[in-house]
Length: 339
Ligand code: AQP
Image (cartoon, rainbow, N blue to C red; front, side, top):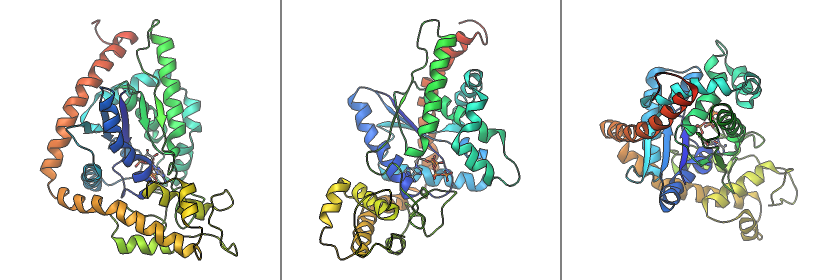
């Protein structure tokens, strides 16, 4: 069972990225190996160019993200970790897949609509084509499973449509591309902003106070968790529910960071005096979850040469796999000389 996922090197990685995606990546290494296959993880620098950005900052963030992934437990001996821009097969496949992607579907994507509103100077065509490049990322490796957070569900559906349409149009009775499944974590698929728990915790749309960063110091985490918005129920009720987004978010964070179910967390807080106890327990669990990652990051991040070597070795492995898919796609589409 082949696993693939990508993560942007934008901004500072937050608790939502960590629980929704990064932790799943780490577990994926074992599961893919147990099935005799490999997990492939890509830092998608090309995706990051679809909104306003500073080229020098992008490089810094790329190294930050690489070091965070390694610190969280990705092992280049057990997975393929690489930078998207090092594997040109992604962009070529993106172009070829455009022929089986409906413009109307792209323009209806939530992420395109939300992010295009936020672009003041230019709404780039890249922002519109983002999901096609994302489809190429996954389909190039014939991945079966894509670990992502809940916010990527729509893009995954589009990717599945693109693969199905490609096979029907060009496959000649064969499934040249694999239609992937998404893997969304049972708890923590959508971590919410601590200050506005009706919105997802996000790199671009969240406030500093509402966002716990993977590299935050314990004091900063405790402060943000202590100030998390809950509700004014009197007496306070520690339970999950659509009417209680702030409390639900804290319960989910605590469950995800203490390897328990939300129900077990609620039961463990049956004698709590109020939301303060929930916040303190959640803060302690997040601090302990992120502590080893922050400490290991501090060791790894300064050696940019080693990070580059790791990415280059990963890109070489990735190119061998993506190149094989691409040559079949080109052949099926009648592009370039016959094989
Ligand atoms: N709040 C979240 N809860 C759970 N999972 C989340 N993810 C993002 N936010 C949450 C998951 O993190 C993975 C990597 O995301 P990304 O960095 O590639 O960018 P994104 O999905 O666009 O999310 P961000 O970081 O919040 O950025 P912006 O503000 O640009 O949207 C993905 O698997 C995602 O599902």
